[in-house]
Image 1 (cartoon, helix red, strand yellow):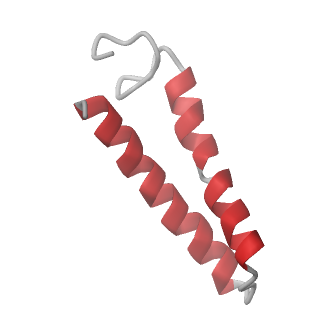
Image 2 (cartoon, helix red, strand yellow):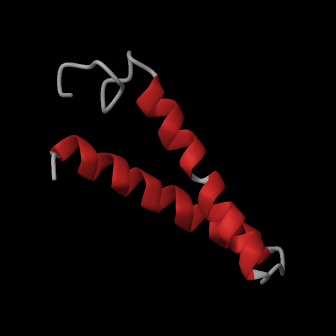
Length: 64
């Protein structure tokens, strides 16, 4: 697994934890809603990947 892929997965994991904890802390323990939060956590990571100027793992950067 490349360094770039590991960085993306780590970022996604942090986003998932934050999103799920945020939903859970409102008292919502519905598994469907927690799963939706986990899917929504993909948005920031996908936005960074889609940005070719992102230095960490944007598409087309020198580390790709």
